[in-house]
Length: 292
Image (cartoon, rainbow, N blue to C red; front, side, top):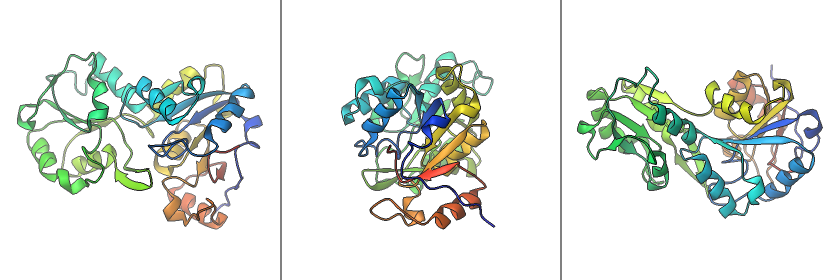
């Protein structure tokens, strides 16, 4: 038996019940290229209501770069931060280089990922190498090109496993939709690396440590008064559940095709309930999009 999930036209009715908000970016505020309609207006309503918010993303880039990207999409600068990114968390760990998981490793790093993620190396005492055979560790931020698939990396990953190279994955997402096109993320490569026998360290949702960074921005707000809004059950909703905060599922994001969402971003409540029940998750509500 499945439990019905309350379906609301927007977030306005939920806002009075919470004081702090953890907002996903990709799939909720933007599609990788543009802000969704109504997003800036909704952010303005939250700010006008005196609510605290932090944007939490699995983008494998520094927080400042994520904020700049949103401003470039049309988000008012005052509403483009604070940002907590998996890339920022990765960068801070590599800067400290103190975790026993890799503290004894050499600092020669092989990077899998596009040029836009290279700000992760800024200010780090790391030597980048061009050949896996010369590396001590792999930093995985995603595919080099959007049209690639996991199978395209099979040879490189097999080589990495054979040489015993641990992998740091700066984005646990398996896939995103960029401008209407579904593309793989670093998490898909990380999962395959594990299947081949490699060791992987993940930074980002749904892992609890990334939420501690969010709670620093929401200091003074009890967890029962914090609401996470995201489009991924696997990362956003599961992550929120794991740290004891409520969540809302945006159905027009990564699960839209699976839910049979129509062009007006609606679907039947039974489909939402079945999908959530299958994953063993219970968001407090579902909304078509991040709208007021």
